[in-house]
Amino acid sequence: MALSIKKRKTRDIVYADDLTIEWGDGVVAHYPFFYLRDVCPCATCVDEMSGEKVLDAKSIAANIHIRKADYVGNYALRIQWSDGHDTGIYSFRFLRDLFDLSLERGPEPGTPHVTES
Ligand SMILES: [Zn+2]
Image (cartoon, rainbow, N blue to C red; front, side, top):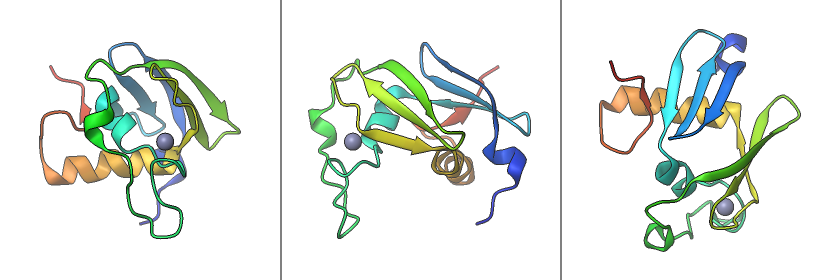
């Protein structure tokens, strides 16, 4: 699935109650912390060879949150979690795909969603 440039660009990123990204096409996406920690794409959480997830969601604290998030170039975010895990690099393409997929699947608690009105 090819993303338009606008969809891959970010206008604003906030991490307070969740990770909120305002995308270049005006869409505002909310990513619950627990969900994001659970889908961490790093080599510790996902087996590099098989692509299988090795992280056990049960090992994630319910109150997990982002301590710090830094841009990696202009294509990704490196997230430092409150549990000390900091090897996860979340590309904007990955993040936008997660959001678009979640919208396609329909509302499900704890998954990426738009701002609730
Ligand atoms: Zn990880």
